[in-house]
Amino acid sequence: MRVSDFPSDEDLMSGAAAPIDPVAVPEGYRAGFVAIVGRPNVGKSTLTNVLVGRKIAITSMRPETTRHNARGVISRDEGQLVIVDTPGLHRPRTLLGKRLNDMAREVLVDVDAVVFCLPADQKIGPGDRYIAQELKGLSAPVFAVVTKADLVGQQQLAEALLGASQLADFAAIIPVSARANDTNDLVDVLFDAMPPSPPLYPPEMLSDQSDETMIAEYVREAALHGAREELPHSIAVQVEEILELPPRTPAQREGTAPVPLRVIVNIFVERDSQKGIVIGKGGRQIAQIRERATKAAKRLLERPVVLDLHVRTAKNWQRDPKLLGKLGF
Image (tube, rainbow, N blue to C red; front, side, top):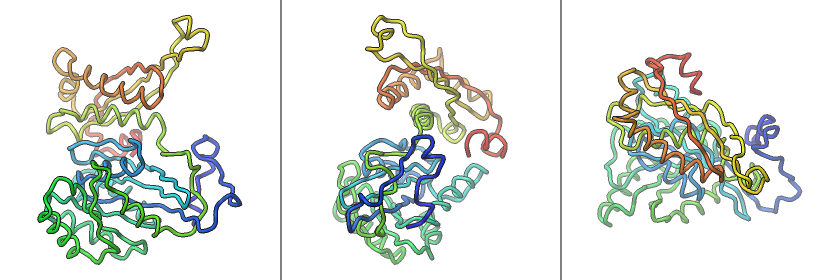
């Protein structure tokens, strides 16, 4: 058990995690960290969400959708898995791309197992071989997971499994269908690979993502939906503030109905010309973004939410170290 596995003092003080009583841990209990890696858009976030049973990572058909190491927790009587969804490893073209790669590599140094996602509906390519080289020499076992198995026939699936076997010497090769929730074999294999350990997080905890982070991600996911080709990489989102609005109805004043929250959100683009694209003609695009993200935020916070969206320009933020730092990268 590594000291770094335990929640930090900051987490404990913030209530994000609670200390575990080792006496209460049953004999034979196993726990550890599992990194989900792969090139962009191979189903990593979809797989993570299905494994955890809750949406902790946004999904999109756009590359570089995942920009943070999102952790989700799977707890069973016999053990616990902490699933870490990482940004897609790729050959970076910007400072942002380099920092996303660094995030993924930092996770790989200290995990107990790695899941390398290879989509069944695509042939092994240069990006997969690049990642396979990155994973060489890791002390943790690497499992090749052939994702999107439900999208192909038996012949194509067999070819995908063969391609994975020729890519590297994996601990195991496992086909999964995240959309069909066919992940039991993978979960069983991962639990077997974990070291003896007390739980790393309380069993009721499903994710370490803050409300601010999740709402920002919901807004970005909504903005990516239907975005033009040049926009996805240029969009960044940050929650500025969450405020409780004054109670307006008698039930709200009496405390028998929830008071709405006002969430102030900044959507950053790199050029002034891109602001009009995000806002859309007559404000239609920003209205759709607000509608989609509000639904997700309400489910998360379990109370009414008013999203106050502002579109701002942060010139060339993907290449500016200071702006990247302010945006959390």
